[in-house]
Length: 383
View 1 (cartoon, rainbow, N blue to C red):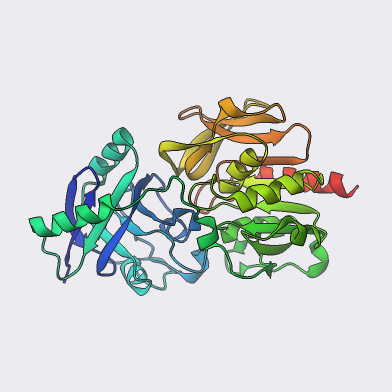
View 2 (cartoon, rainbow, N blue to C red):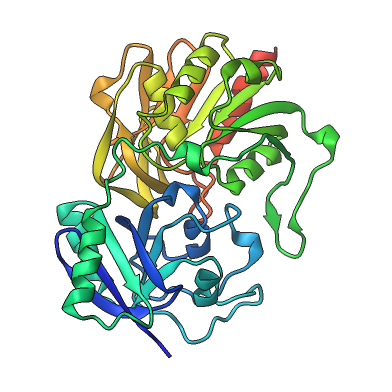
């Protein structure tokens, strides 16, 4: 039996649908993602912490879920909003239906609502707080709506919220798993193939980022977000990677301080998403909260170096302000959707970053060459 579910936005807009996940109440910033595939990777991306994800593609759950497609150890999205949930999940890799997957991790979800209308609201008014209220006790009365509205309006918003230290790993660990291949699973290269020691800061890292570094010969030590620079430098790394992650970069003073120290050593640094924003802050730039952010797998980005265009995966609600770039930073990439800054490179240090997700998962692999550039900087550093 399908139970009633409500989605109530902080502006008072109410959507009535059916519950597809756990029973209960979930509150967060409501955003929309335009990806047609990869819903499991999206749900398990730590960058979605404290966010309720609306998937604009109408049919979600067709291929079920499986353990190999998870980008972290758990679902990090606060809730899921979709148009239609299929009756049957059909795929040879399917292990569990999307609905059961949500329930197993106590994640609230809602279906059978007009996601096009919701997306237009978020696009025109900006991302806003919302509440999904679902379960057998919810019948959609005015009292239910009033309760959900109260919960939504109590959400403080992501600006000023340091979430990296909430989603990061507790202890350092080594990673040596490479990319997935059909019929073989995730490959693990021989130790003698891993020529470069890279320390990766986990601000909410996705597993496929680590795999793409391993594919390029990197032996990885993954460290917690608040690890001091001195501890990392004592490991004698060939390069330092700054991962993606959720929340506002500005409160992450511990990370900014560490990055400043790394820049003074000339150790190669590569940042993605939140790591990109942190490199910008450590270099003297400023960050801003976007109206509704970039969330999807079809975002065109232009390289300012050679005028080529890449289709990229994106997931961020904050951005580096191009107007605030100091002389030591040059812009390398811009979004062709809104002109926002997508990439920076230090002019005086072997350090660069990219706002999108070059590892995709889900999404295109157009900008995988950014990982190759990181390896080039490491080779120059070691020489």
